[in-house]
Amino acid sequence: MEIGKKLKNARMSSGLTQECVAEELEVSRQTISNWENEKSYPDIVSVIKLSDLYSVSLDELLKGDIKMMEHLEESTNVVKSNRKLIGAILANIALAVLLVMMNVLIPNPESSYFLAGVFCLMIVSASVLLYQIIKKF
Image (cartoon, rainbow, N blue to C red):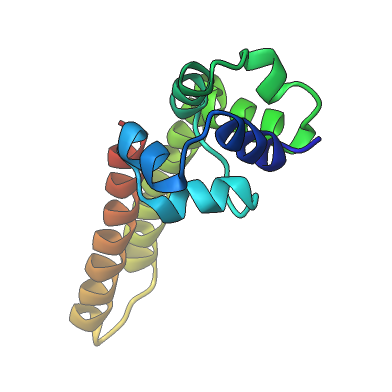
């Protein structure tokens, strides 16, 4: 059985509404609905809270749902997350070096426009990298 059905059955067996569960977990009612309809999956902390709230073991909730297990593995894999972040940092540095080298190697009478473009591209690249760093924490 998929986790959405398990969550809905456990909630109904506990006699709780989606609103009550949402309030207890400090999420929206729509979030609970999305979990139960498998439009999205809860994070591991929410699964633990749901397990406690419904008095159902984590094994009962999680075992047998491959998609949910993959979601939890992906969302909690720190090594993979760090590799992605390091890759993004290296890509940002490589892009900066490449753009500076292009500016030096390609003689261009309108180099001020080129430099402005490079500057804008670097700002966008750095912003994306900063977003990834903030999202990680």
